[in-house]
Amino acid sequence: MALKQISLAALLALGVHSGALAQSLDDLKNDKNTPGDILTYGMGYDLTRHSALKQINTDTVKNLRPVWTYSLADTRGQESFPLVHDGVMYVTTHNSTVALDALTGKQIWKQVIEYPAETPRVACCGIVNRGAAIFNGKIYRTTLDAYVIALDAKTGKEVWRTNSIDFKTGYSMTVAPIIADGVLITGISGGEYGIRGYIEGYDPENGKRLWRTYTVPAPGEPGSETWKDGGDAWKRGGGPTWLTGSYDPDLNTVYWGTGNAASWNAGLRPGDNLYTSSILALEPKTGKIKWHYQTSPNDPFDHDGTNELILTELDGKKVVMQASRNGFFYVLDRTNGTLIAANKFVDNVNWANKIDMGTGRPDVTEITTKARSGEEVVYWPSAFGGKNWSPMAYNPDMKIAFANTLNIGMKYKAVEPQYRPGVFYFGAEFAWEWPKGARGSLRAIDPMTGKMKWQAESDIPRMAAVLSTAGGLVFTGTQTGEFEAFNSENGSKVWEYNTGSGIVGQPVTWEKDGKQYVTILSGSGAVYVLFSGDERLAKTPAGGSVWTFALGD
Ligand code: CA
Ligand code: CA
Image (tube, rainbow, N blue to C red; front, side, top):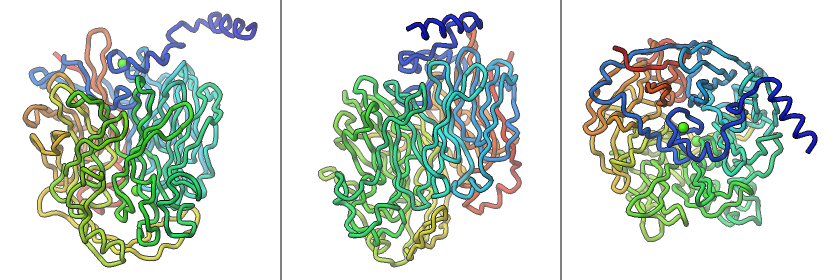
């Protein structure tokens, strides 16, 4: 007790006002209703990325102008979700965390992360970081060499650092953590390196690990009966958890997606391979799995189930929904995991005919059975997915999701994988199959039917996240650098601004003193640039920066 009094007195003596101690659990819970700040990844625990702000709207957006820009001094792809609290913006890159004056972009502090030079070798698909969490005066983030760290929000000084696992065995961390029920929750990357995935909970005060829940069970554990190889496939079974989950405080449940099973050679791991390519409902204090739903059992196709899990109400039911890499849009009752709807949201899906509403399982085609038995196939959607990682937005008033979808196939043949720690462990040979039409389109999608209300195609596919606003707008960006706004009712483009590098980041909106702002990171790179071989993007310069816009006169 005496210690507590001294530390509080010391804080007051240092002139730390109560704002520094804000970001309580209630503040996080109410984040979506307080447009003056952004305290949670996805602009609310429900990950809807929908804002009630409407100063910037279909009429006024023509006057949207840059207010400031800040150089991140980094040439990697910029995927970070910006947080805003008390007039300060927090942004991450793969090797730095910065605090900026949200109104001017002036740097308040910058904390540089040093990691071993060989670290990027184990980071598939781009050397990125997807953002931070904020709670009780601290900023939390993960690092490429698999540390979870806490920084003082005022100074950037490191408060604690905990190693999750040895990165040399193929693990890395790029995920934005969340705070749920007072626990700091993180996921892990490394799916294509023969890792065994997990989700972890940490004590945000001191970095002590509270729990780890593996997404691939060990022999004898629940779910292990779905690994029928009789060997040790489970040890390198995949199921990474590289994107941020959502949280329902009323049900006190965290929803987290898991990645594909490894290797891609599904014939070597007969069975459903739980809990890979699944949606998990977890208890935040313990990591206990309450229920699971698997989107792609015994997946050969790199159809990660990691995509964002949006929480809303449909037909009077509390639902969780996901536009999966595998091309189906899933809606589940989030109280118990019962499937409500599962429909194709992209045009070309040939690995499954439909999802059986009775069993909840995919009705797979011969493309899938041939792939599992080692025959060469061409499957759609490709390993890029019907949608890649970049999160969609959901407008609860329109009951419409806005997603950057992909139209790319893949020639594929399973081969015997070679496991070496920290080296790619694909177990397949593959090449892209390009479509006759556009490779991507921003689509307005009805979650219950998968049908689109409108689309805005782009042959160089958009790989950015989407933001929806009550101003009737949808914001996203192109890989050639245009930050764009669309009319959410009809998909007509109403504004764009070139940011100088490609956009693969996450737009957000916030307000200060009665003025609405929109912020996006620009910075070309990451999975499509690195893996597609699309030479059209060779002309787009690299170079990360933060852009903030508001209405001009
Ligand atoms: Ca807020
Ligand atoms: Ca994967």
